[in-house]
Length: 66
Image (cartoon, rainbow, N blue to C red; front, side, top):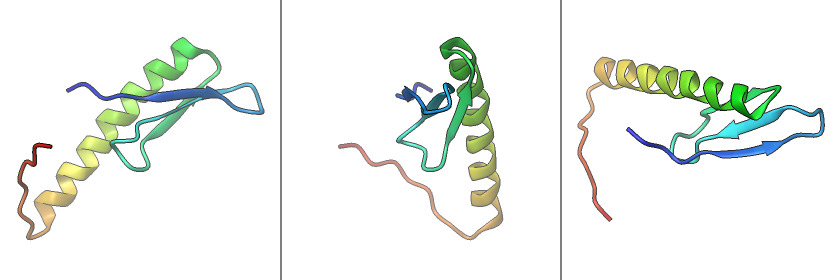
């Protein structure tokens, strides 16, 4: 999977990364490289939690192309 991420430096000097396609999926790092590595871990965790949530509930998943 490939996701677009937004990275910016905050007022404390940390780089904050957010994945707009995954609400609430964000991470940070002291360097850009560290922030990029940390967001990979955050994405994996986000997907794992969402898959578990779907498995526990009576929901239907489907794909939508736009």
